[in-house]
Image (tube, rainbow, N blue to C red; front, side, top):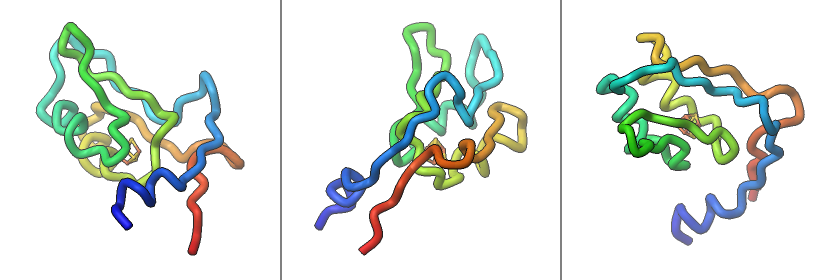
Length: 92
Ligand code: SF4
């Protein structure tokens, strides 16, 4: 079974309008922000037509990669979703 097929088995309870990830407003993205577009396994980060990086939190698997990479520099803020929300992994 491919990893992608396994990922499709995850379910999400989305906390609409209450993102657990925010990106610091920027004109030009830092190298770390740009890297998030490539490294996020759920492809939550994209670049808009002005080149700025945006995040869609609803597919986040809470892996922490972006947090490690970009929170320290203040490029993003990251908290766990509120209780009951977020990714629901299928076990087994
Ligand atoms: Fe992507 Fe992981 Fe960050 Fe969620 S925690 S946005 S899945 S890199």
